Image 1 (tube, rainbow, N blue to C red):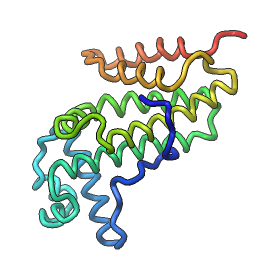
Image 2: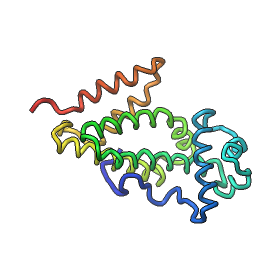
Image 3: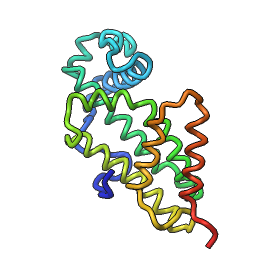
Length: 199
């Protein structure tokens, strides 16, 4: 992950533009939700016809918004990155350390469930493609903001940055563990290492 921050948390600029008309925007949002659920339950090969049925729209409506499966995959990916990024700005009422930990736990769950979607997209577009670069920037911006708050409060160690932390939690999310609790235990150990020691 890069340390650069371009878009504020919650924004992946230039992608996943919602339609302006209210009825078209409603259909677009329903399709995104239905596709996200279908990809999570049935994998990225989920039927487009089934996604249209879940969204309660016709297949023609799906194709008007998303002319190809790749366009739909990209829109779902960007939408979910924006949602994950936006959550960073919704934790202001928490102590800086608690805000960082809450978001990192959400990030690990998000990354673990979206791995198949990211891998499918990577098969079709280069890892340096603008969509991936913009999404990495959005996530990095969100995580960097929370980490800096915790560091400024003396609650997170100073000798790290979100490039380190992002790689750490992404690696934890990628562990294929039979025991659902194992990921949580490993993350707890990693967070213990991230916390600032007694000064």
